[in-house]
Image 1 (cartoon, rainbow, N blue to C red):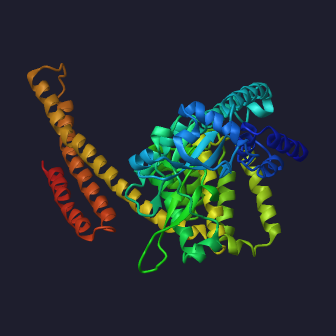
Image 2: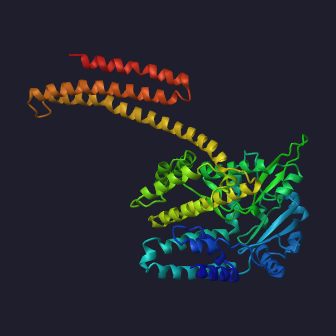
Image 3: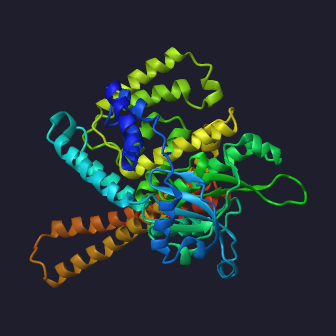
Length: 510
């Protein structure tokens, strides 16, 4: 398997296009492939030989309707970056465009010529292979290969649509419009098409350039927790997140400050790969984070089931045991501390945990895959900024904040259930009175004095029960709220005495 993975890695680098993306995508599918393959494919880099500028110029001319030297005042033929799907060059806007947009220096991002056709050919090949694999029982009982390719196709087509990327950028900008920690490039829509993207040149200090940061008075150790916090906001609050936050896509932009305190912002670029999660999944992810912060293995597995990672038939006991063991031994350790752990201990646990993961019948949803990717890159960047950085130090206060929010939701749920239940119980005596009235009028053909007496007792019991429900609800709600608001909590607990006395009085009536 290792030799096969090595051959595929070399082939992917030769073919370019989606084959590199396939390797990156599959390297994170621990639920599909064995570690011998995933470890080798992790080495694939999304960086290829640049396309000659003449080809880039020709495609840009077709898309923009004029030669690039007519549209732009200047273009640097040397690419800033060359990736498997596109290539970026620095350029300058002409006077009228510069005056209209307020921009001068821009980045001209152009698709690799013919990449759309290459992508479709690659996807067709992958669909054929997936069809073959679906007939192999060993594979089909573990993963829906055609669905896997469909997920990958959806992400890939979005990534080569620059209008979609520009829309992603503006949505991301709206999410952080009031956050002074984040800055983003502006889009020059008049010079943007599906295959050409023109945006503000916001290149600054690469986030992993710790020497460059210190040279301008920025402490890298202070950048790490802010970066982690911003990524958490995207994942757990906004539900729309940058799924490719590697160092090449994140810059630290110094902010002019007379005090000389070294203020800065984080600038994000490249919004082709974005992730989105529904409110329901986001709620499950919050519970995941809270369970991880609390070192709660059982809670973590329960949250995984809520998110949809585990299929209903999965036996989660072994996974719960493994997670509990993981938290007990390594929970809360930063990377600096983990370096001092005996490597044999890691190998033993990795072997045990790997067997557990691959033995469980689950498949990660696509959005969850992107979340794992985003969090892995976030952790790696933070460790580059500060070798002593401990992700737990950022997770725990953030989880505490989420827990307070979840407590507020619990209070709201309890209050709503209290109102609904109390309403039903208070309406019950009226309904019973109606039944008695019908009995008195002869509308119901029941001629049993015993039943009438029993209904009378039931009416009294219902009135008493309704009061008791209101009493219990007020008492519980007061106890919960008291932790956050002592005055309101105490008032609710005192008020609970009224329905209690009413319930006792009703019950003692003859």
